[in-house]
Image (cartoon, one colour):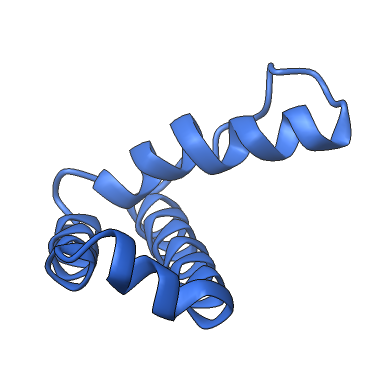
Length: 83
C-alpha cells in the first residue's frame, strides 16, 4: 500500500465518521443537547481527533467501531478487511 492509498483511506474513514455524526445529529439533536450538555464540545473534540493525519485516528475509530457494527448488523464475518 502506497502512502497515497493510506492517506486516501484515512480521509475516507474521516468523511464516513463525519457523515455518521451529522446524520445522527439531524435525527436526535434536541435530545442529544438536552441529555448531554457537553455534546457540542465532545463533537468538536472528536472531529479534531479524527483530523490528525499522522496518527490515523479516523481510520482506527472506523475500523474498531463503524466496521464492527456494520458487520454485526449485516451478519457478515467480523474479519473485515481494513479500510
